[in-house]
Structure formats: C-alpha cells, structure tokens
Amino acid sequence: MDSRRSTTAASLPIYKLAQQTTRSLASASPWPHDHDQDRHHNHIDNNQNKELTLTLSKDSFQTHKCDPPSLEISLPKEELIRMYMAMVTIRRMEMTADTLYKSQLIRGFCHLCTGQEAVGVGLETALTYEDKVITAYRSHGFTYMRKGSVLPIIAELLGRKNGISGGKGGSMHMFTPNFFGGNGIVGAQVPLGAGIAFAQKYLGKGKGPATFVFYGDGAANQGQVFEAFNMAKLWDLPAVFVCENNQYGMGTSARRSSANTEYYKRGDYIPGIRVNGMDVLAVHQAIAHARKWAMTDGKGPLILEMETYRYGGHSMSDPGVSYRSREEIQKVRADNDPITHLKERLLENQVISEKELKEMDKAARAEVDKAAEEAKNSPPPDMETFWTDVYIKGFEVPFLRGREPEETHYYHRDSNK
Image (cartoon, rainbow, N blue to C red; front, side):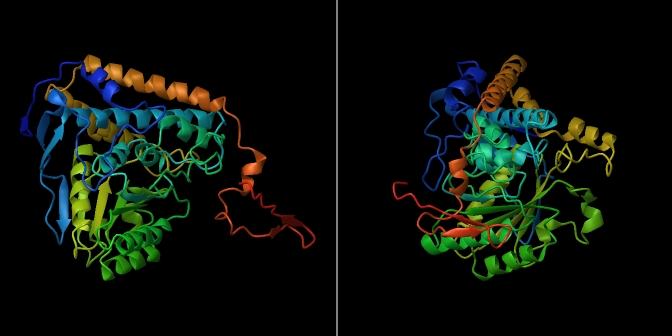
C-alpha cells in the first residue's frame, strides 16, 4: 500500500470550500494560475494551505536517458479537490456532448476525451498560463483547463455565436490565449509546436515559458514528427513533446501499426519518460518535472508518453467496439478509471467524505446542464463574421475567385473596424 501522510480537514465542508475558491464553471477555468514563471499558492490560506503528501506507484514512470520524477508528491488539499472537480466537470461535459451529437444538434466531427481526463487536468495544474500548449483535435478537456469554460465550449460544438471560436471552429478548432488549438490534420500540430518553442527561445532569450506539444499514438509514425524532434534537439528548444497513447489510432491498435510501441524512446537522442496517464497525480508530477527540464538552459526537449485510454470510439461516428471488446473497455473502467482513482485517494486520506463528493458531482452536472440549455438557446454567428478571423487585419485579399471564372467575391474593407 502507498505510504501517505494525512493532514487535518479544513473547517468548511470541502465541497463548499471548492465552490468558494473555484471560479464559476460557467464563466472561467477552475484553475487560478499565477502569471509569473513559477506557480505559487497565494490564493490558499490558513488551513486550506495544508499539504497532503502521497507516494505514487513505483510503476508510474519509465525513463529513457534521464532520471524519473520523484514518487513523492505534496499538494494542498484544495488543489486535489480542484483536480477532482475539474475531471468530473470535463467528463460530464463530454457526456453531454455525446447526447447532443446523437440528438443531431452537433454536426461534423466530434472527438471526446472520456477516460483521458487525467492528462488535461494533470497538465494544467503544473503549468502557468504563460506556458504554451498545442494539441490535436481531441481538445475539449485541454480547452476547458486553458481558461475555457463549459458554456463557450458547448456553444462552439453547437456552432453558436457565443462559442469559444465564435461558432466557426467546431469540435476540432478551439483556442484560448496561449492555447493554440485544437488542430484537425493528424500530426500537423507537432512542427507548429516546435515553431512556438523556437519563438519562445528567441523572444525570451532562453528564459521564456515552456511549450507542450501534444499528439497521439496514431500520429507518432509520421515523418513530420521526427523532423520536429530533430529541429528541437538541434536548437535545444524548450519543447516537451507529449504522446497521448490511448492505445488505438482510430481503429488500429498500437501494436498493429508501430514496430516500436515505446513512444517515449522514439526521440532516440531526446530523453523520454513513460507516464501512467490514468493517474492525475503522476501526470502532474511528470509535467512539473518536464517543465523544469525544458526551461533549464542547455537541456533542450523532452518526450513524455502518457499511457491512457479512451472509453468511446475515435469519433462519434465510431462505435468503438469493432476492433476491441466491450469487456476490454469495462475492465479499464472498473480497474483504472482516473476519476475513481483520485476519489479513492481522497477518501482514504480523509480529505473529503462520500457525501461531499456526491455534492460535487451534483454541482458539476447542474452546471453543465445549465450551460447546455443556454448554448442551445444561443443564436448562430452573423453572416457578416464570415470574413473575420481569416486574414490579419490590413492584409485581406481584395477578392476571392468562385467556382467559375466569372464568379468573383470582392472583400469590402470597413475602415471603422
């Protein structure tokens, strides 16, 4: 059994404490980062600042050409509660998206992260908002944690005006400050991430924030990924490449598509760490370790492989059971669910009661349900916005050719905008 040191409970019921100290789920991300380079916990005071020390499983990390993160992790109890609340909210949001899609209210592609919540939550708890993040298309959880919130995310899925991308990005193209999406082309975000890291090194004179570049096991065999690795190491960029290995690239298992499934070793000359991506605390510890590594002058990039699992199909058009059994999915849910895992730790260490956890679950459900109703009643984007967010202001093209040579669409600049 893991060795643990419990701290005394806060005076307020913990779910009320979380509600008081967490920004409204309908209006802001639940994580109040400081904006300087190092995260502090000035928003926590008195008993709320008591830390709980936990020991991670010895199987949490496997390394390649580097030392592992520490297995001892100490976090304020409030932070552990935030982690739980964030994962519950993201799962409820994705379950609602599933329902809306099946009701034909969401159209086009839609990729859910149900089962993978620990990766996005563990990432954000170890960063500042000055750090840069770029991901593939399974990005709803990342968007929520990167100063997003439930309402604009669901509104975006529904193609509404108040969506986080104005209703024009949809499921795959969501952005917030210092979150560069949500990218639809498999693997194409990896060289972009290397470019962002280069900009950080160039502009910050080697002292800038770190850049976290996410891709899946399905993209790991692409040539552009290895090209980005080479450039990042050649120039010692502050980049952390994170492979979200959810075991299946669309409907193809990793072992059927990859001669080497140890993705954390794929960089060869770049050190790497395999992480238990179903344990939010292990993810947090690995991300904090990687951030420090990337920002240490001369160390250059690092590769993390998050071993995780998606409960649903690749997208909403994939039932997810033609290439794996229902028994396999149920076994992961029963034995390795990230929310259940953290819940058990909280209960074992008397951080929270079962009743308080149920209150938090109920609050997350109510918040998401309210946001979904508001999103459904929101208007679509105005036709006048079709030209916006396409070109940088002042660099718009004068016209676009249509389907036939005679068909031309002229762009009328408005000097007042």
